[in-house]
Image (cartoon, rainbow, N blue to C red; front, top):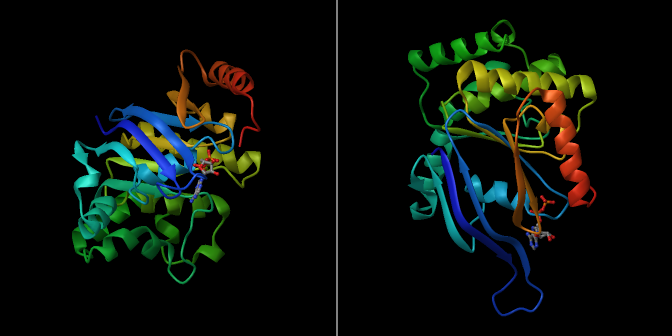
Length: 251
Ligand code: ADP
């Protein structure tokens, strides 16, 4: 199992305060190697909290998170930072490229942070940048390339350390439908072409329809879970049905 959580509970606010929030109420998730899993749920259902805990950015109040069999709660601050860089790739809503770095430097940033800029690493970045068709623009800056190229740069950066899992946070959040389609095609390529395991939080049924499986959470609990059976269109329709049953504003 690439990712496994057991009884994840997150309570915000002090132990003795009356105004605490139970953001997660016992979440069990298993993700296998090569899976592409979506997480959806209404606003306030706990999606961001879950993603932050899975990524080691926040700690659960109780319960367990295992990534590649390692309980991340056992790691101290420095080991966790290293573990995260080596094992988890992140794709953010606005892609978060650094404008002062070239495309190639952005892609190589996680390696540079590890002090790992050898010729082997240069070669690795070349392979992945060629795969996503941005090798020829490696010396350009993010503001001189297209939105699609920026997205692919962010995808290459997320994959450069060969993470065991990629966590994507609303990757189509601010995009028009054509760009959303592009991003999802690239995530699909990443999953199918490179075998990357992806867990993606999204409010977007179109984006979720690219997944193999969608987990719906509500009030910090897993409400239901559906698998893709036939094609994307059929899955999209079932995702819409689930969202309708769950209610809420879908974001
Ligand atoms: P979602 O991402 O699904 O909108 P969140 O994980 O952001 O949900 O929030 C889940 C619940 O936890 C909500 O009730 C929210 O108000 C609460 N919450 C989130 N972050 C904090 C925080 N830092 N302090 C207190 N409450 C929080």
